[in-house]
Length: 347
Image 1 (cartoon, one colour):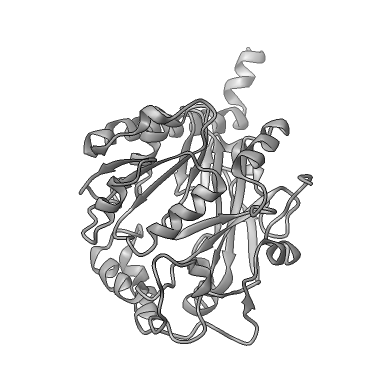
Image 2 (cartoon, one colour; image 1 turned 120 degrees about the vertical axis):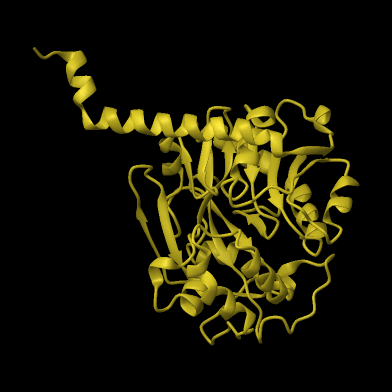
């Protein structure tokens, strides 16, 4: 005997939806459990108002980046920052505690075991981010988008709301200096793009992945220099950092992919037509050499750390990433002309 109900339970599309729903619930449940690892240090969440734009991040030893990180995102219009400090010993925690628009949690638990910090941040998004536009970025990522120098995140998210678009994607664009890594000088109060002036405009390759429907973008300088012989291992560069959050949402792999799966289709990659931005990735500031030595030993940043030892070793060697084909960073208009960001229909 067959009928509509029987067909529903035997339809492969229904089975996939069911599995993804279960996956999302498992991710949410483990994030709820992870809250026990977090120690509240500084609580200013009472200042969060309806309509505020919130920024969520987890970090360790980023004191050199924090002054400009907050300058950049406050200027864009972030109203409140919710930060998990994972065992910093360089003064980052004390700096964060002094910021009036920062709520701070600390943990010494394993970053890797917490899905690279996602469990902690998902819990905070569930508790504080519901119905807010939320930004999830690392301390070494600076979001730029078309006209960000004159239009705030509030302007952007208001337009996205009017378009019934619940998320905004971005390409992670690695910036690098001219000359050997580690030999530059950098003032922590200064714009990192004054030290890291260069980037690769391409090639970038992308394809959709199933079952999540997320885009997978690879390429750029790290693929060129550190993964030339194994391009399939090159870092994933697509992210969906800005989302109108719902407590039922869950990032799956950093903010490279998200559930429900339809949110992944809001980004169609570099050279696409959907509105998008770029996360300027400032990984290659001078301290990258020492950081790479430390992280190679900590083994917290990859599912299989042993496979990425050559990557760390390549950075520690301090190569010069610049080539005559490198593009000098000069702002959002240049990125738009290269097709790396798109205004879509936002005029």
